[in-house]
Image 1 (cartoon, helix red, strand yellow):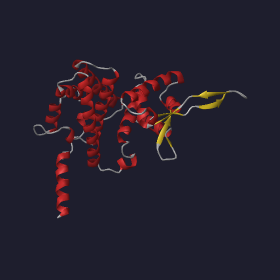
Image 2 (cartoon, one colour; image 1 turned 90 degrees about the vertical axis):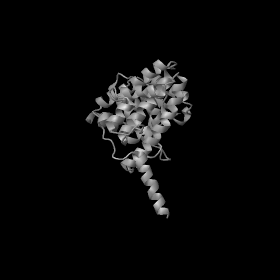
Image 3 (cartoon, rainbow, N blue to C red; image 1 turned 90 degrees about the horizontal axis):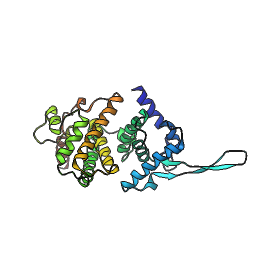
Image 4 (cartoon, rainbow, N blue to C red; image 1 turned 135 degrees about the horizontal axis):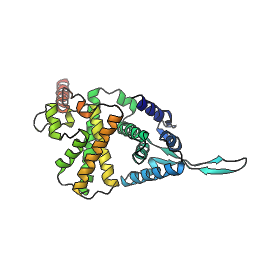
Amino acid sequence: MKEINKNNKKFEDIKHIDENGAEFWYARELMICLNYSKWSNFKKVISKAIKSCENSDISIFDHFADVSKMVQIGSEAQREQQDYKLTRYACYLIAQNGDSRKKVIALAQTYFAVQTRKQEITEKEYGMLTEDEKRFYQRNLTRKGNYSLNQTAKKAGVKNFDKFHNYGYKGLYNGETADDIAKRKGLRYREDILDNMGSDELIANLFRISQTEQKLKKDNIKTEKEANKTHYNIGKNIREVIAKNGGTMPEDLPTPKKSLKQLEKENNKSLKSNQK
């Protein structure tokens, strides 16, 4: 756990804030944090990340700003040194395309993935939310993520979506299907398991969802069998990262006392009472 916090601190230490209050990272500083010694090797990773960004129909210029500059190499000589000003999302894509054999890459993937998903509201705002508010926020993101994943999976040849999603759950939950998870949580028939997860468990599933979608696109998966296998492997890989980081396995995380649907009904009832 100390190692995780140490690496997370590294990523925070090299974070910069521009004149508009927006956070960013320099590629050359990130390169050192990710244990790359040569710019030429790291540049290949950046190129792959830029391609991933393009494939997602997201403007690369919003996330990878070229900030190359002239540097002194002698008493009078200068040469251009290439660098990029990166958003958190760009750092996340770089971590995704980095050398998976490096332990720090796995830590960076988790760090930037979780933080990127929080970025729609500021970290300060997210930190001020109650646990139930965090659950609503993360549940909304998983809903959007699953919709997008289903569109990508459909293009990859998936027809049985229940089976496809169960492969992801099996990988992440050590063989458990959605039904198994529901039974373990003591849920009623057809009750949504995602509505009965805490924020940490939702984040783990959100990570699974986003990673699977990227992998299906990146590897240009075209068969249902391969799509299912990919979803399982991504779930399993995330489980391994959680284990390496000393985290709590998703099946060991506590189930909230109330589902989000229950909380929603209570909130609506409270609003109606106040309006009378």
